[in-house]
Amino acid sequence: MQKDQENTERQIAMEKKLYSRNFTKWGFDLNPFVSFTTGILVLVFIVYAVVANAGLFGLAPADETLQNMRQWVVSNTDWVFVFAVNFFIALSVFLAFSKLGRVRLGGMKAKPEFSNFAWYSMLISAGMGIGLMFWAVGEPLTHAQEGTPIFGGADSYVSALASTFLHWGFHAWAIYAIMALSLAHFAYNKKLPLSLRSIFYPIFKERVFGRLGDIIDLVAVLATLFGLATSLGLGVQQINSGLGHLTGITVSPLMQVVLIIVITAVAAISIISGIDKGVKKLSKTNMKLAFGFMLAILILGPTLFIFRLFASSFGTYLADLPAASFFLSLAEGSERDWQGAWTIFYLAWWISWSPFVGMFIARVSKGRTIREFIIASLFIPSLLSFLWLSVFAGTAFHIDAGNGGLYALVGDNLPGALFELLNMLDVAVLQSVVSLLLILLATGIIIFFFITSSDSGSIVINAITSGGKTSTKARQRVFWAAIEGAIASVLIVIGGQRALETLQDAVILTGLPFAIVLLAMSFLLLRSLQRTYRRQKTLKEKRKFQSLYEAADVTRCHD
Image (cartoon, rainbow, N blue to C red; front, side, top):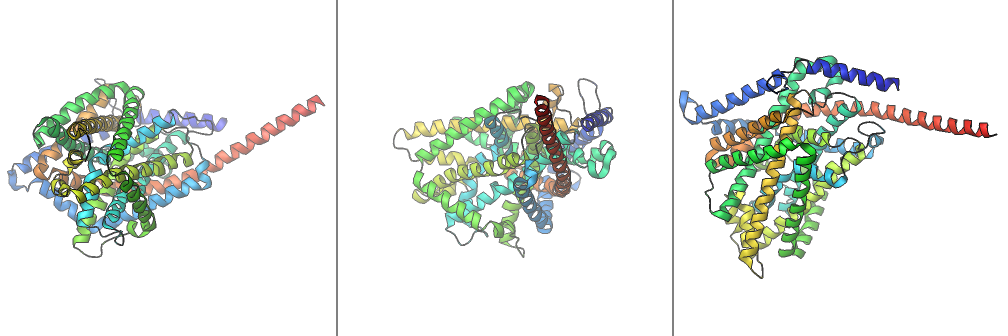
């Protein structure tokens, strides 16, 4: 009891020290260093992009500069991403099935705030939503046609889907799980502010509430902004393609910027509503729509082929997972190009995305045990992603093999891949009507995912830039949503015809430094969890002894 009181007093004192430096004018409540430095760096990036693309001062176009920097990262530091993420998987499995899995986030008496369905819905919507809609057709189809350097002994379709599983399965969710668990543990069990700086308290102590902590949060905000902007950029490209199929509007960077502005404005309504009324309801609705959409494709598509493909690909994935996970090309060439364009891009994207997804998952996961948390954030989302990918990849393979031409249509138009598949879906009755309805549904789902991503991202960035506060005025969250949209717009504009590649370049560059930060966090988490386990075990034993003593005392009184 005394220990809990001391922890509470310590938390109040530290939060007071941290929040006392916040800028609190005009309805804002921001850490000035983190927020203003982020704003300045984003503004510098935008000005540089505009000036460089205009050819002023002899600067090379911004997209070329990003491409060259990305090539250097892939050629020289790809091993950092590969070894780091495999370590996160091993650590996640260990935490789930060791004695540490019994530790409860928030203490032994903490209770979950959300139902399991609402919790799973928010996890998946935040973690994968837009990406699974964008890549579910284009990626496996590309791998099947062009080949991959991993899972080489299998059928081309099985190899293609197993390679896609590698990018969307355990590796991605292990990154999220470790980040989210670190944040939740130090916030709910150690009574520190819900901020990345808190994870480094065991090393730097009170200094994390000063300039050193500001720098940690600044790196996290920049990684999150560019990771989020990449997802929003991919999402709006696909929305533009869907609306093009429905209404014939032009597919162009200008139209995509207009769509970002419009959808971000709509997202502001959800942002103002908060998590319970905004994100939670939208996430649950979107999960139901997405499940219905997947079920429709499963029924209308080659159902038996999809089940066979899923079984074979999942088996191949599990059997060859160690070799594929540690694959690194030994020399320059097509294999390294493939790995840089696909595997390293995805690992960097998930790492950049992890402060956002991790903090959001931490925010909604109080009261869960670590075992429950890891199963929910690593295994269940991975299996659901595998099923989703199998349905759309199997349908794409079947259409391409039967009619031909699907790959030719989507090879240079990945944002339109899903809609081309829906157009070519072989339906016995009213094919054009069914295809139109499915395209309308798919476009709506992507818009909803865009809104929930923007909403969740704003909540997370707002928390980091305010020093860990979870309740600030809505205008502040709307402000960060606008910044996210602005970065996505700039990346699309400077990329022009190669906007997708520019988005990938940016996310790989921001992912590298944060991979190192995440590794350090993992070791701090493990050490702290061991101490928390010993404390909770001692408390349980004391309570058990006390209850036995009281029962014995009652018996003596009766005697």
